[in-house]
Structures are given as structure tokens and as C-alpha cells.
Image (cartoon, rainbow, N blue to C red):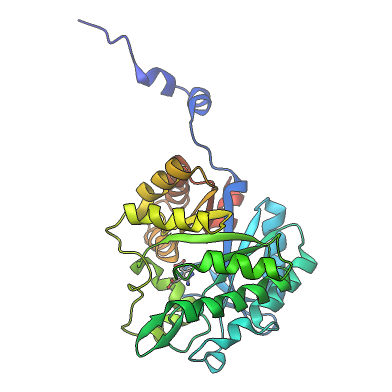
Length: 326
Ligand code: PBG
């Protein structure tokens, strides 16, 4: 009988040893918590396709942000849910300096100043058609949309938003937004570019939550979001956003695109975020509700996968529950 000289199982034998040799770790400071804000007071409206997730009025958002800060979560992302009467063809409510998102940001920075606030830049919560940009004859116009996104970015930065996060995938928007912010004296506003954002069916529950699914109908976003078959193209997108001034970049969705997270981190060594999107959250929770998976364990394993792939930060709707279980 010949004994193997290398036995990888030796290091795995005891809990302390496994701890000692673990290469990736998940920490509460890796988490960014995406939230949905609605008008009114004392409102907590469940999102049916995202078990455990609620649309919160600003008073509740403040309370939950306080909880997140206490748990050590560094930042939250805030998405507005507008009543359909305020959505228009051009999404002009997006740059109203007193809109729901700007009021939420001002309240957050006043009441919970220690938590970072991230705001999406894209028109979809504000447009009657649910597209991220200005649409003429069925075409999403790139440069006209960028003008709108610059105005939206300025409104959010003036309200005190720390991180401007363009999620629209228009060409050239990072450079334009950086210039607009700088010209307005907002040199310190950070930009987190949703650089490699795919045209994904995993956004379904998010579109339920903000009401853009009904607005979109059978339309899709494939003329601006990336084709799921492309990896090299993601690197081109990320490279351009860095050249244009992005402070951090993002890959989205997460689990089906771990190879992209890895390649982006390897190539650019930039602060790299990954978004565990609504559909990923919904899948894990639905299976857990049925008793088919251990919800807590699969969530932690999924997030560990992001860390191992090289992500520096993870947007997850499970941030609070995960922070509590860490
Ligand atoms: C909007 C936006 C989307 C998400 C974040 N910002 C949806 C979309 O592009 O249709 C998706 C987030 C999620 O599914 O959790 N530009």
C-alpha cells in the first residue's frame, strides 16, 4: 500500500484548521443594502416576489438605515417607487430636486449621517414606458438620455447623495456625469458605474417592486444592456467607465456572471462591486420557503462565491439578515 504524501484533507479535519486556511471571508463591511422608498408615512408594503422585502416610507427607511448602520453595513442603495401618475414619457420627475429620492437622501444624511448613500441614475422608475432612457419612435436615444442623466445626478448629489450610480448603460455617460458634477462643485461625489450590466431576466422582481414591469410590457432593454453571451465586451465597458472617471465599477447580475467579476478584478484591480439581483434573492428565498434549501446557508454560500471571485462589495437584499447571522 502506497500512502499519498499530500493529503489535502489534513487541513480540513478540524474547525479551527478550516478557519485558519480559509482564503475568502465574508464580512458585514462587504455589504450594501438596496432598499425601496415610497411616499407617505408609516408605510411598509411587501414586495410579493421578494419575500421579506418591503417598500418603505421615509420614516421607516430611516429606522431601517439606523439598524443597518448599527450592524456595521457601510452603505445603502435607495430606489424610488413612484405612483403611476408621476411617471411621464421623459421621466422629468428624475431631476426634480424635491422628488421622493432627493427627500429620502436629505433625510438619511440628516438622521443617519454615518451610512453611505448610493442612488441609481437611470430613468426607469420615472418613465411611463419603463425604459432607462428617452425614447423616440421606439429607439432609446443615447445622447439625449445623457443630458437627462446629468440633471438627475446633479439633483441627487445636491441632496447629499454620496455615490452616484449610473445603471442605464448609455455610452459615454460616466464622463458626462463626472464633468457635470465637477462643474457644479460636486468633486467629492463618488461614481459607482454599473459597467457590466446584462440584459437579464433576473431583474423581474425588481421591476415588480418599482412598477416598471407593467410599464415595460413585452419590451426589453437589449439595445443598451449587455448580451449574456459576451465576456470580452464587459471588459471593454469597464475599461471605458474607468477612463471616463468611475471610482468603482459593478457587475450585474451576480451568480450567473461570476466569471465576469473575476475577469474584471483581475484585469483592472478596481474596487469591484457585484449585485446579487432581485431574481437571485427571490430564487433562494422561494426554495427556502418550500423547505427545499436551507435559506441562510445558501445565501452565505452565494455571497462567499462573490468574494472568492474577487468582489470587494456586494449589493444584496439580504444584507440585514446576513449581517445579523454573521
Ligand atoms: C434600473 C435598475 C434595474 C436594477 C437596478 N437598477 C432594473 C433594470 O435594469 O431593469 C435591477 C436590480 C435587481 O433586479 O435587483 N436601471
